[in-house]
Length: 627
Ligand code: ADP
Ligand code: MG
Image 1: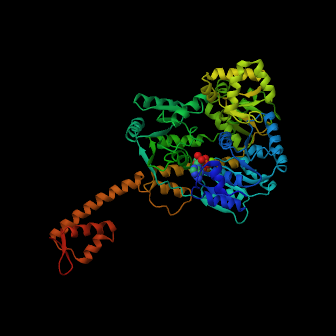
Image 2: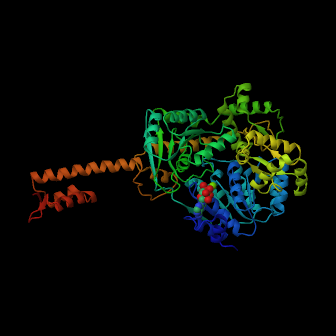
Image 3: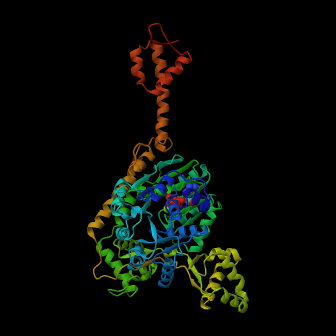
């Protein structure tokens, strides 16, 4: 078996593991079920990718989001490791080709969404695949106490039974209740191991500011603290407005949200990463898979709903270990406003039914139909036609996805894909006939590997940069080559889509008990967030306690710690004055001095200093007096 250190060096080019990574990997290779709790950006992927490379067979990774899957598959491919992402965003033909590739041992890693994993087609193939490690990423999704419960995760139990191999579960944030659920539902065997890294981040300064004029305060902060920043806002409109305001005040900024088209998002991301845009104002759609080490400042313009979200988003600051700031701005009525949002997210049964029926009518989906089909969720169209609130649309489908009826496929997170349909020789003859395509195709082949075998994610934007064409020209060329049957071109769908995981039911699933439970859990998390805002204790301790961490020391640098230090230093100044005045008026006896000092280190130092300087001296009876 290859050694983990060698794999790390050979494929990743890193010299050493980060704290806990090596212990986690050892535990996995020891055959133990293992839970790894490391903060976002802590390097969880390596914890299953490295042992996966050491082991003989295939590693199966369950991951909830297409964007996360594609990101990791892409990165593995760059390292020369074969990997596949299997999810409902693939066409049926794509999926069939990939199942064949899988059976033929073409892959070392297969990433799959939980709804794919529970499908009969998949379970049926499993026995033919030599899977020797099961990794469950974002494992908190299994718990109804977690901030992102997904019912399909509960069905992973079946998969575990099917596979006879160790399981590694990974998450960034797990409260004690969530940890319990992970171990229970993933059927961890005796002798399992849990590794947990402290929540504390010693280079981050957490600050909460109650502020009537948030925009001016934001500006002042950005003027005072230099370096790259992220500003999190609540909605799309707000991101544009804030960015505009900053721009007018000479701060290089731009905005980002999921409603922009893919080229625009990619462009903005690239510019920000390269340091050409200093501040990105965004919704929480920004940040996933983005790994910029030198973010100096993360400012929340609106308060997040959960400590999990806050910890994750603010934690994007200071990955390089240098001093950085996490600021939460709170306006006068923000807390009440947000609490209302948290509650409103839980629609009642009739509201959900209305949305669902309208959606089915719109797409002509009969009862008993729709199974495994993808439908566009065109919010604007549905809003116009059926007078449905856009927000309620998303909320209703979020709820139905929590019931396991549908999944919200973030197809906009999926790149366009290309597969070449000809072999090398046919392609050669095509060049001879159509010389105008030769350079274009050769560039494609140079940019992307595996085009002959797989549907390969490509970026029209990237291609256009390389060829100095416009994005539109690239699209036209690809479409043309598609109709000439040289390649198959699956352009990215900009619309979010709904995938039916079951047939359209006559009665909508609405598990009142579960819904109430989720609502309760959401309110508990929101209350924890309010506690974070209101606490007068160390902010890092407050976060640590929420995640079940004991014994963290004061960070000494959050606003509360700094205030306390400031209070202390004025208290000590006053104490010094008192000692001087008292000793001028009267001698201070030994017992009296002891009471005054209260065995307080700082106060003892004050006395020592006064005596060193000869301001206070002791007489022969041991009393203190002014000189
Ligand atoms: P997580 O899943 O915990 O959020 P990732 O697995 O995405 O984090 O890793 C975050 C970044 O840290 C990646 O860019 C990865 O290459 C880097 N990284 C992980 N482990 C190491 C290591 N041992 N040395 C250097 N960089 C590492
Ligand atoms: Mg991860």
